Length: 404
Image 1 (cartoon, rainbow, N blue to C red):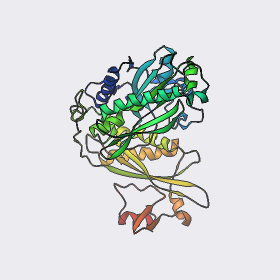
Image 2 (image 1 turned 135 degrees about the horizontal axis):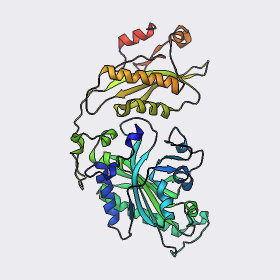
Image 3 (image 1 turned 90 degrees about the vertical axis):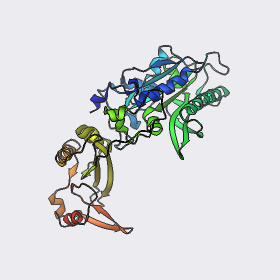
Image 4 (image 1 turned 180 degrees about the vertical axis):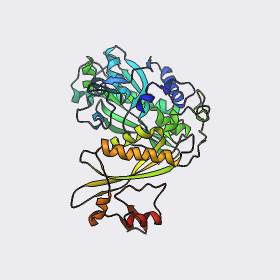
């Protein structure tokens, strides 16, 4: 599934929403006095050094774990952010540039998360002879007037970008943390009554510049997600749509126009399937999500954990997941979804070493299914998987309680 996404380069396809947002941002930066070099075709396969070490991301950072990152081998991976090219371009002598491309992360499954998406990275260095610049100890630099000046230039530049993308909207800046910038900030915009985080940024960490032989230079960097902006501006409800080749989607957008409001065309019904199992000690939820993506691809709209339980005597923990299957282009049949769900159950047991409930567990009074009344409603739990097309009704609950 992931291999089929690599090389699609949605940000280079004219009239595509990702292209339109990328070009809008690029046009803004090309209107400024600084000359920004444009990089739109960098190889998504990078080294651990490029993606993590050069950016001061520590070895124990969760983003470096196989449960979060697509590793190709021990040394190479699919980039998790376009910042992976920052140090490379600084070493090449570029002092102001924009870098856009597809990035990949193992993540949860819902309408706003997808394992591949697009980011834009921006970098600007200041002259060697800037007042207060040069080689300065880190602690002294962060508190210096020169560092504050770079931070203000960064915010002023990005305020101009916000005016282009969200004209007339209120925005606010707050402090944040990224390993590769210090100080770091995030920008939020008040759009249609909600505060939306649209980008992260900061003054480039002195050690990042030292790693590329530029300990006497200073500058700023920012990063933003193009899908996040496109979903908001075009009102696109499902991130999977960006990867669709259906003309009912692609024909709705036009280069240069960010006022288009997406018109939904799919009203195909969802299909719900549940699975419950005991989890091993080293269980990683993202591994289960990735297993589902590999089996069902884009037919998986969402997976949510609807219940979990820890046996107080044995210490064993179980989870119950509800998978929502839905195609945006056709109706799904029971047979094909049952086949996918059966494979997911079998592969989860074989690959992830989870224990799907069985009849022997039902014979144990401590493990029998239970229905618990709470708050005037019913909280349903079953330790064995019961395949359903929706929330359980009275017949399903009675079936579960009788050991069926």
